[in-house]
Amino acid sequence: MSDNRRAYLIGGGIGNLAAAAFMVRDGGMPGKNITIFEAMQVVGGSLDAAGDPENGYFMRGSRMMTTENFECTWALFDSIPSLDNLGKSVSEETIAHSQIVEWDAKARLVDRNRAIVDVSSMGFSMRDRLELAKLSEASEEALENTRITDWLSPEFFKSNFWHMWQTTFAFQPWHSALEFKRYMHRFIISFSRIEKLSGVKHPVYTHYDSLVRPLATWLLEKGVKIRTKSRVTDFDLSEIDGQLLVKGLHVCCGKRDEVIRVGQNDLVVFQNGSMTDASSFGSMMRAPERLTKEDSGGWRLWEKLAKVNPEFGNPSRFNSSIPETYWLSFNVTLKDTSFFDQMEVFTGNKTGTGGIVTFKDSRWLMSIVVHHQPHFSRQPDDVKVFWGYALHPDRLGDFVAKPMSECTGAEILRELCGHLNFDTAVFAKANCIPCRMPYITSQFMPRCKSDRPLPVSNVSRNLGLVSQFVEIPEDVVFTIEYSIRAAQIAVYQLLNIERDIPPVTPYDKSLSAQVTALIKSFK
Image (tube, rainbow, N blue to C red; front, side, top):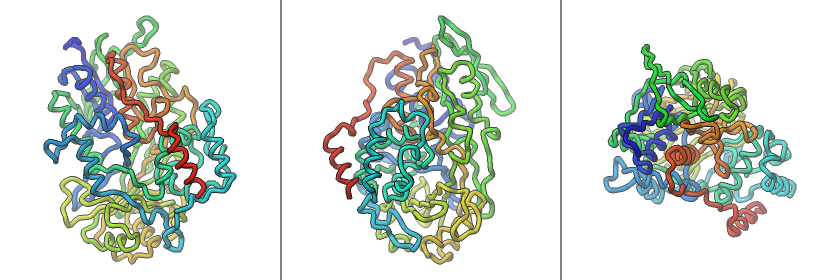
């Protein structure tokens, strides 16, 4: 490979960090020839985490990984050294930590009477089972542009299974039936342990601290250039033999604009779309602002590209209905252990082993996750943090007569105390930071096949796309794995790398997995 070939990566999320790593590790590109442009101050994209004990810790989302379903992720991080455990890779560190702190949820669902729900039964009727089977076996063509409610009856959405599945993976009844089917097949093993959440692998700290920072550090050591506060606003395109060639990038860096020439042999990898675009944070005394894509411009470049050729997808399918794609999360920083002590008594789980606790009758459909401590790197021993979210933030609360979207951090904590029947004194020294994410489940919106572009389009000569909004048959969006798999596909195609990509393991074809899931559905 020529040492003169350069690569320009637009967006500093996990997908493009992975793409840069594949270029260096598997493509033999010199790191100094790779530049990552990131509009924010730090890389990591949706895998963010920041804060301090005084001002509060915060992150927009929390992710889950499994050993079985993250083939490309583990293979990549086998090559990335841990920052905290010398001699170990990030994969080795994560799996070892997960064996020490295993999830075994004993209070997965809590009802309106503050009682822990018996979730040994999925709560299916025979009609539910038949309809699930029909959906699971339907062709993707039949499922295009349909919602889950088009295939399943209203009673299904009252089952224990739906409450757990919905709040584990963030599905809504109006989301894509096609994506729901893919999840049922991809995570068939998780079906049998959905009430315990066993099998989930957790990094030592947040995904930013334990995955993003080691990967970014490795890239910098290889000479990769990372330019933060640099937004790419447009492409210069030309056509050669019926294929589009990116020949220039318009970059805005503060008050300075520049045009970067892209050679015919150079590569461009673009993170099209963002599920955390236009996010806003509130405080104990202030609700988050209501932002849209017009406030951030995060979708604009993909929209421009899609107008050039329909092969680059249809972003309007995903970013046109905020009421159907948004929810709120919140981060709580505590300087005493009262809340954690009471949660251990209430749930029967030691801190870090309880997984998700969902208040199933909550109008907001609120859930919390109490992670193993410390959860943030450099978090002091006397400070505790936990994370929560609600899937129906436009509804009035049960204990606070306001929609969650209009609530301050203090009001969210008051609502949480009501569902747990805890005295509000447990939060006397708390700092709750709410976060509004208008596009967080945009990748789940009903769609047809052509709405998502391929990682390398048939009409593209030197442009690859890496995000939750590209099309990878058999895999599922809203996972770290999807971004990393998309990156590996795009880089291998662009660089003509003749090396196998870890395949999606077909657990849904396993007779054992099928029988186990069937038995579970009849409990």
